Image 1 (spheres, rainbow, N blue to C red):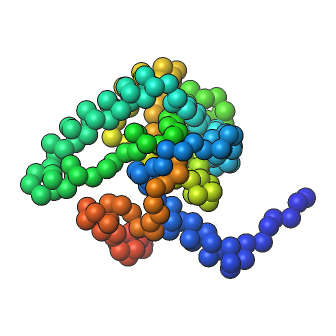
Image 2: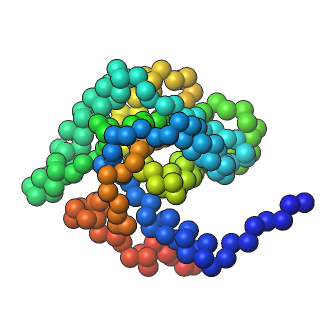
Image 3: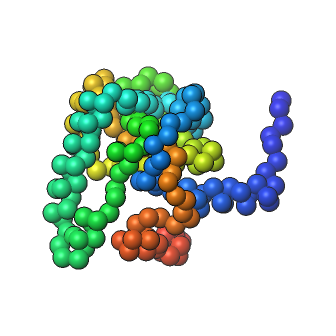
Length: 213
């Protein structure tokens, strides 16, 4: 039986750095990623945990210019609708935010959950069926950290009509959109979230996230 690796204090410190410097990137350089990089990232992402070992993640790279344009149009329409939710200075601030890297990122990827997967035989999701898409979220986060460790930025765009994106990409009807990702080399590096820097939302205290019983 192989022996598990030892993760020393230096590794823990580096892991902390990785978590701190993992940022939601919206500003990308236009240069392409090296050949095979996307495939390698997906291979690492599939090491994520999944309920019942169901492995329900499905990755779709969006390379076709017409499909990319249709995705961008849906984002713009949904973003205009979102602006209507705010008033006054908050509306002005929202309108000034860059919330997607769709015009710059060399790689665009949609990640879906296969709701009809037979892998895992349903273990662990009878009472919590949402564990299936949660498993896909774990894969996205694994991909995100792997990308960041290689100096690659990732932005998760959520201002979409999911059904519209599913139609644009012509995926099987049992697939549901979980994430739309922009991937590439970031124009700049930051240890704090852009929305915090822009005054949209400060970081909540850690104490507010913990409840003891």
